Length: 253
Image 1 (tube, rainbow, N blue to C red):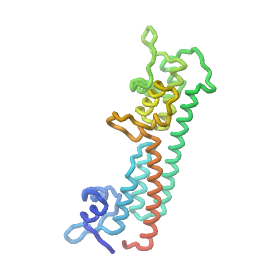
Image 2 (image 1 turned 45 degrees about the horizontal axis):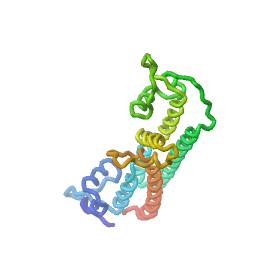
Image 3 (image 1 turned 30 degrees about the vertical axis):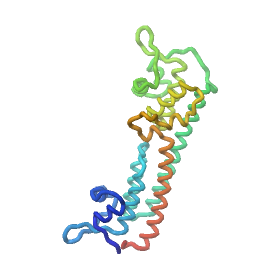
Image 4 (image 1 turned 45 degrees about the vertical axis):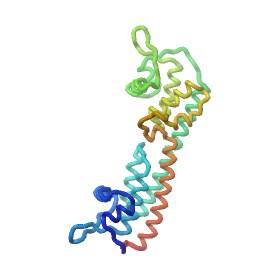
C-alpha cells in the first residue's frame, strides 16, 4: 500500500496542502490515519478521491440544488459507497439534461412570442397589479425587471405605470427565460441585440457575454455552462466506475 504525506499528496494533485486539510474537514475525503507524531498518512484511495473532488467541483453549478447534489455524490464516494455514488451521479446527470431542455424550450418560446404567432392583440392597458396577476408573477419580480432595464414602462398622467400588449409580450419572454435560470444580464443582452437587429441569433446573443463585462456568472452563459456541466458529469461517472473497480477489489488501498 502506497502512503503519502500531506505535502506529497497535495503536490501530486496540484493543490495546496491546506486544501487537502480543508477537504478532509468537510468530509470530501476520508479522515487520514496519523503517525505517532501526528502527521497524516494518506493512501492511493485518497489520491483518487481527491482527483474525483477536483473533477466534481471543476464546474460551477448554481440552480435547483445541483451543487448540493455534487457534494452529496463526493461524500458518498468518500465513504466508498460506489454503487450509491454512481446512482446519484446518474440522477444528477438526468437533472442536468432537464435543465438543458428547459433552457432550450425557453428559447423556443421566445422565438414564438417574437414572431407573434397565435397572438391576439388588443388595446387593453393594464396596471402593475393586473399585469403581475395575469403573468402569475410577483409585483416585486416585475419591479426588479424594470429596475434592471429589461422593460421601460409608460406612465399615465397620474404617474401610475400602465402595460400594453407589447409590454406583456416582452414580459412573457422575460418570465420564460427567468424560469429557465437565464440571468437578468443575459436576457437584457439578448433584448438589446434584438432591438438593434430583429434578425439577431437569439441563442448566440443570450449565451455570449460582452467583452467589457467585468463579472460574468454561469447563468450569463447558461447554454455553454450546462454543456460543460453535462460533460463534467460524464467524467464523474467514468471516474467512479474506475474507483469501484480498483477499491472494491483492493479495500486496503
